[in-house]
Image (cartoon, each protein chain N blue to C red):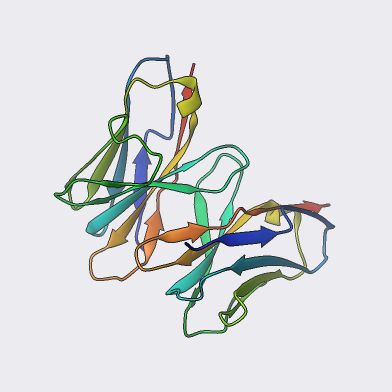
Length: 116
Length: 110
């Protein structure tokens, strides 16, 4: 089946630093990738949708200048949390939608970000 | 906007018991519905996928049903085991994205 990886799986950083999270589709091409955030004891919330080669579409309330998304190829999307603060500590999960397969998303294993 | 609700938020059952998790949604214009399992601090594991035209899907001890007219889905777990302890999320696929429920945290007591 379709496999999506995320790197790193866990990251701890100091407040004010930037953190980059990678999302890769390993065995298929993903024209669309999604980034979700999950705070403790809450469900997943969509942050943004990115299409390969174009700008990401951010959900209301998500700061595009803080959460930079790049989807430069059909197998890689990156989320950069700029100037991270403790309130950005969360579980970030990406998903990828395969080309030609409508509405089927494959999820990555997630990245646990802790900002000290 | 689609709203997805899962009740109960938490459930504890003794090992061996059969149980039902509920998921309700407000907009029946969906492509499919999925049930996921999430272990603490982990990502999502897809359990069952029901297409919009289907009524149910079964996999091992799991059975999921879908009733679009009433905006409901259930996940039935037979003969529960301690290893079933996790948070279960339902998610509906709309035109462009998934809408997740709030989850039910299941604890199966040995």
